[in-house]
Length: 318
Image (cartoon, rainbow, N blue to C red; front, side, top):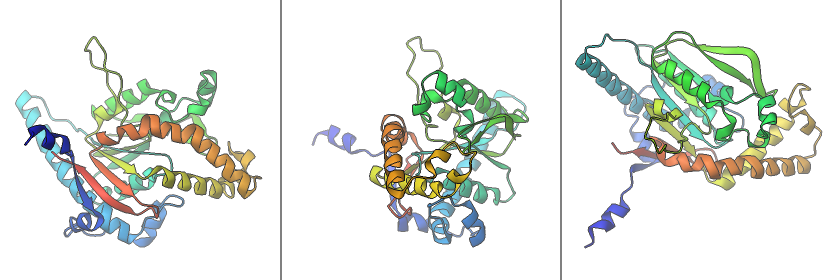
C-alpha cells in the first residue's frame, strides 16, 4: 500500500452530525430564556431554545475547556519567565459571509459566556467599525469593494487588538452605523480589559502575503485563541441576502437618513434584481476571493442548511 494515500485522506477536522454534537452538551445548563434568545436573533436568522441547546451549549462547554487550558498555560509560562502576572483576554473570532448569521452567533456566544461562573466580562466588537470612512473609500475607488480586505484600516485594527491582548485599559474602537452605512465621526466603544473578547467580521481570518525578508507581518487572526466560521452554500446565502434586502426595504430603508433610502420605493421585482446585482458584484466576489478561502483556518466550522439550522459541526483536531 502506498503510504501517501492515507496522508492525502487526512482531514484536519473531526466532523459531527447535529445529533452527535448535541450530545456533547452533557449537563451544561440552559441559561437563556426564550425571550432573551428572540432578542439575540438577527433578521431572518433562526435561533430558538432547540438551536441554543443543540449547538451553542456544547460550544460553550468546549470553550470553557479551551479558555481554562489557555489560562493555565499562560500562567505557567509567566512563572517560567519570572514575569509578574497581568490579565490576558481570551479572543474569539467569528467569520463568514454576509447574511450567514455571524452577528447572531456572536451575540448568543456573548450571552452564554457571560453566564459562566464566576461571571466573566465578555465584550463584543465587529470589524465594521474599522472600515475606512465612505469619503476615503470614494477617494480610493473602493466603495464597490466595501467589506473586501483593502477597505479596512488594518493598522488601526491591529493596533486595537494588540492593545487588548496586552491588557491595556480603556481601548477604543470606532463605531459604524448600518443606517448611514458609514463610520460615525468621533464616536467610540470602549473595551476595558475583558476576560473574553469576541471579534466578528467577514474577513477576520484573512492572511497576508509572506514577506521575503522574513520579518513578522501580523494579521488579525494572530490575536485569536479560537475562531468560528459560519458556513452555508452560496445559493442559500444568496437567497438569504435577497430576503434580508427585501425586508430592509420595508423597514430600515424607509428612514430618510438611510444610505439605502433610494431603494425603498422599489417594487418586489426591482428590489430583487437590485439585491441580486449587489450580491453578484460585491458580496459573491468577496466570498469567493477572500472569505471562503479562509474557512480552513477556523478552529470550528458551523455548517448551516437552507432553514438556517446548523446541520454539521467540524472541530479542528489538536
